Length: 134
Image (cartoon, rainbow, N blue to C red; front, top):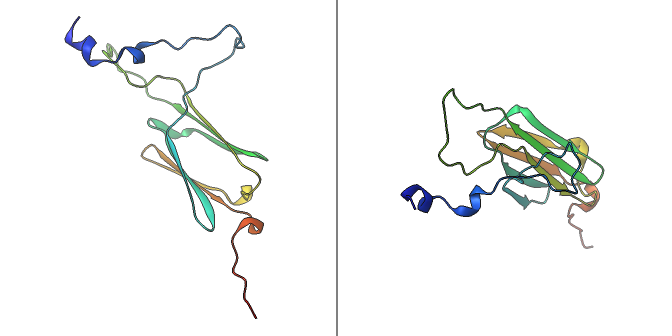
């Protein structure tokens, strides 16, 4: 066994294959690492999308879900051969379901240095409000 084989985890060498029950046009995707925080005004989602540019990013807000699809545009240089890669060339896909607490018309998104930040404002009905006591 070479030194390279001992440094590279065996599990990461498993090829991505299409299962028997998948449609012919099925493309495997990778679920990106993400964090969700909450403030009184909004939910904030941070999604790690390394190698994804703005033109390869698609964010859609449906009635009860937010869908993020990111495609990398990097092409390897001529003659380049990887000895080991931790990532695959599959597109990223993340689907976040919500219970209509998000005001879809006011969603803001920013992509910078491979980090997508989404601000998902809450509907007025679900925001906490202070009640004055008389």
